[in-house]
Image 1 (cartoon, rainbow, N blue to C red):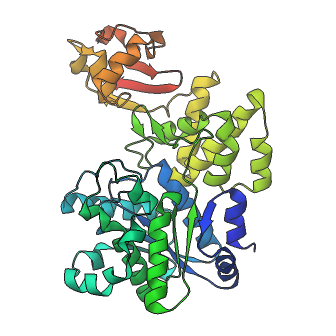
Image 2 (image 1 turned 30 degrees about the vertical axis):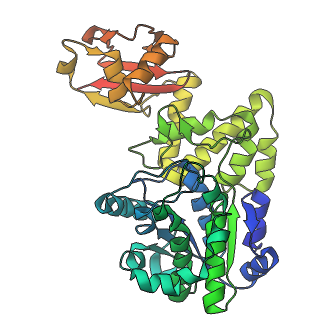
Image 3 (image 1 turned 180 degrees about the vertical axis):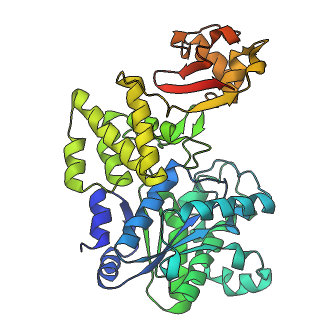
Length: 408
């Protein structure tokens, strides 16, 4: 079996390593326990998180042992990385609820039976720390001068960095120490924006335990223009099917830019690299076949083969002149609600095609809203019972985002 380090490198995941040759050697000779952190700032993973999930799956398939660390403790402070201002503070109740939801999601993708992997919450050791003891034992190993040179802090110095957030790096570093002591965890992985925090953890464990541990970062999921993937006008692309349907996930990937196809196939599918190269090299109309493969393969990983087939079938029904559109996302609404009519803006908002009335108003004015395939520019339009055909009405946003209303 190929060394998983080489697999990750070939597929384009790896960005930086604290000790590249040593890490590769370690991964090639023995099973390694590693961890990746997920702060429960929401009750679902989104598309950007899935790079981390894919890495964990590659690593576990190669015989290594994953720890998915849920940040029930760190989320109470908030990671300043990539933020121009302090994150909104969540209550402990919100954090705990989100943590349980993330644990359930992550457990779909990594095997945590019989000690093959773990989902752990750092609230277990962070929430009950003795502050003075922590400062004396852990804080003394961190140089403030060095911390202030970290990218995650530098970007915040102009607008102000709270002391609360300044503690985040030390807390994340302490996580590595705890996981080393409890699980013999030797490797911390994370997105490239976590490099400074990972360095802190590697240094802390090496200082206190006099053992070799390592850090590795991988690419963030971005377009060829350097923008983060997974954002739409309506918000993030979520892995929770109640937030983003399998069909909408499929459609998002089916419609990415041609230039992003090869990279996304390499990062978000398990297709052999020979096939990734072949599909990524297609041009013109042929590249759409590669996008269909990408959308199907990733939807299958996230939601299972049955949902992927349904999403594929629905897409073909709409865009390839098929006839079966049963898998198109739909909302059932009581017929009585339409006796006096429902405004178009209210309906778009209710079914989730828009995130606000102002977005619906803007899209309608720009000609991006359709009712039963007829463009509707009047954002004051009212939808009535006579607009339905066989108790069904089709809404469309833009070229390819459909939602059906079914009367009950």
